[in-house]
Image (cartoon, rainbow, N blue to C red; front, side, top):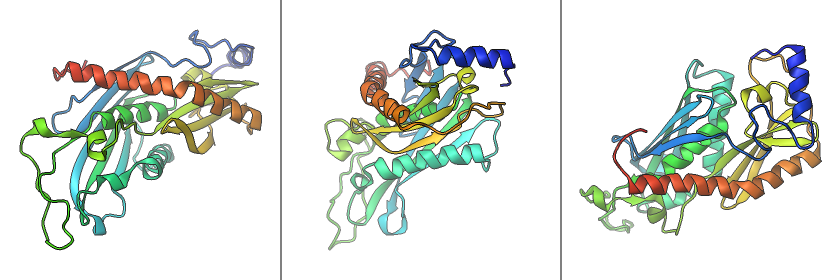
Length: 289
């Protein structure tokens, strides 16, 4: 998106005010409205679809496979496909790297082990059908919902195969399948998330729109897992194909402000996503929307 100098000046001055005035009327900590649906792909172990108010849309599918632990260095793989972008483009590669890095460092992969030799391996396929603003938070939230709705078949064979060579066998009844929290034997499994922040003047806003991205002085990616902010916290340019000349380094005080916003509101985001999963569990009609 290319803005005129007058549009850029007006938009930046509005965002830099105290409190910031955003073009869509949101407060600094507010997300845009979204629609979400989980567990709608019959061929996947878990799935989710999210549509944002600006028309952005993402579908995530989670599939599981039984593998030999000795032959698989990574037990979780994430692939990202963006409509209109080559798979080997820097834009797609950076998104894929961020998502892969998030899961490899903050996912309890050891809990995927079935026996001492065999394990589940999860494949997370993310397809961004359309996007306006930087799509990492969109992908992250859709992945959260897909993993939260993922079900794995119940293991019925022995877990101790140290002395007897035995391949895992599973229950044929899908009604006995387990959510990841049951597989991991924890009360509630909440996958890691990415939140996107934008900096304008002394203000930090969450989930900037495409118009806001064109004038921001910096973008910040903050991870969230286990009710706390996680590393890495990344400073990026959120605007693509723009004439944004406001980009600059970030002050420590603004970085702390972004972390503070994440600590204050991330739990509400997680609670809202969990509510979507619970609602779909009550009404599993197989419809997309």
